[in-house]
Amino acid sequence: MGCEYAGNGHVEILLIAGTLSGLGGIETCIRALAQEAEDRGDHVRILALCASTHDPTWQQGLDYAEVAHGSTSLRKQLLRGLPAMVKACRSRPADAVIAIYSSTIPGIRLALWLAGRRRPVVSWLHFSTVHRQRTGLLRYADAHLCISSEIANELITNPRIAARDVHLVFNGTRFDGAPLIPRSNGAPVRFLHVGRLMMGRQKRSDDLLRALTQVEGEWRLDLVGAGDRVEDLPALRALAAELGIEHRLTWHGRQRDPWTAAVTADLLVLTSAFEGFPMVLIEAMVRGVPCLSTDCSSGPADVIREGLNGWLFAVGDCSALAERLQSIVHNPSLLPLASGVRASAESFSSTKVYQRIRAAMQQAIAKVRGASFASQWE
Image (cartoon, rainbow, N blue to C red; front, side, top):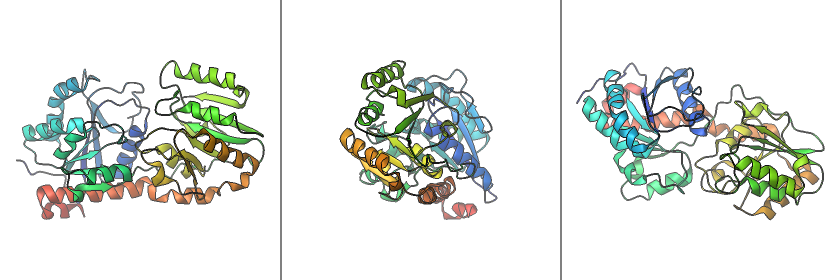
């Protein structure tokens, strides 16, 4: 098997992704990974097994390629994508290959073998443990980058995965270019929802509307994001009208930069039934906005520090949600200071996350190729 590698103390990473929308948190994390790598002289190449389904421009400025005539079908992705994966592994040998979807791991293994390269394959899943996502295939990876404590704990207890190969890295966001969002400093208190809008299902956006009917006093809600399905937004708007709160809501729709849509924000609210790692919480905190989130699987409990940067409530508990919102409307001074909220997110900076990812891959290199090769990274 070939032994060529990037060398010179720099890291060459090949990241292979399946279906991406171009709008989600995975794309944000990939971009942050590439930017952090570039900042320290490393490099990330991205190979997508099909075109982005919604926004094909998200990868601008990245070293990005996609499989011609790729398909959203997993089976077709692996078949049509194999030649492209072999070429990517052979033409510019990477030091490590990251798999976004566990279902691609066997295909990556085969591509490396056909290319004559011996490289570590590292999983980097962005899904809650609620979705199994063929987790049985994870045993074919050499290391695992985990975005939440819950995911890491589940992999550690998997008898087919060695605990030493499981690395809790979280997800991160860049602090530069993220100014603090002003507070309302008086009535009305402004609540903020950022993300896909759903009637029930994962995001449970209707829970927020129902809870707000119980909140007295002056408040407004800014909703930034589009309906996940065609019927979601009309259903939610009809519900708001039925509940008599439509006049207090502003529907901003999908925004390329959601954080510029709301001029002021006092509190971000997340009502999800499950997450992988809710990037929206970190992105809000970096901008000084405290968060009120469900204690769902997985991620919020890793981020929220009660009273320091926000609060948690049980999934579906609209009464507890309404009670917390009411307390803030009655007494906005309960909101933690913006500077403290921002400081609480420092461990989730993309720089620190990249440092953890790099250390994990260095360990995988040592495991697969030997400590002498891994020392080239230091």
